[in-house]
Image 1 (spheres, rainbow, N blue to C red):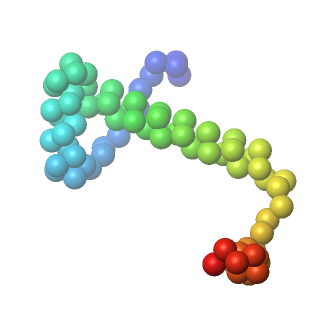
Image 2: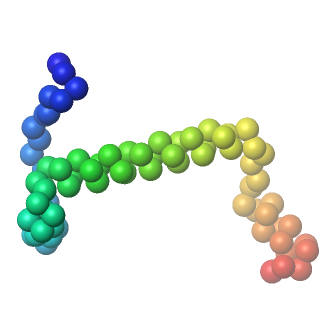
Length: 78
C-alpha cells in the first residue's frame, strides 16, 4: 500500500457542525475530507506533544494533594 492511498470511513456529524464544515470547505475551496484530516492530524500532534511532556516529567516527585493543601495551610497561604 502506498503512502498516498486513502481509506474511506463513515463519520456522523452533528448537523450544525456539518453545515459549518460544508461552508468552510466551500469558502476555502477544500473538501470536507481535507478539513477533517487536517483537524485529526492537529489533534494527534497535540497528543504527541503532551506525551513527550509527560515523559520528560515522569521521574519527577509526586506530591499528594492532601500534603500540598496541608503545606499551604501551614504556610498561611489558605
